[in-house]
Image (tube, rainbow, N blue to C red; front, top):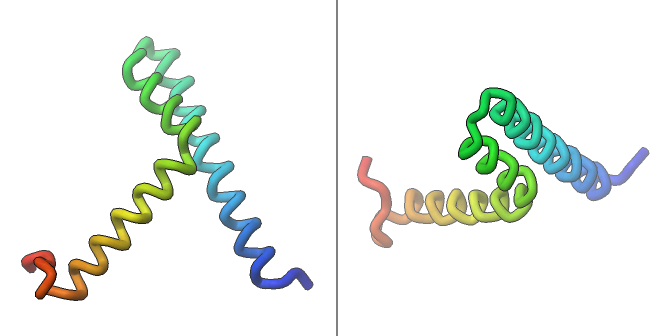
Length: 77
């Protein structure tokens, strides 16, 4: 039975591969529709998926911290 750490690593790898593939396929569909600007955006998202995912994770973490601590200027709600 594989250890939990190797399972998490595999899942992250699968997540990354699927994300990159999804954006690449979307870019190709946009190219077929002659939507060059959109195709370029999705191609770049595919190529830089790891960096984008990391950046979004950092934004989410910061958002969660602000939400949990109204004294730091948390989200009004």
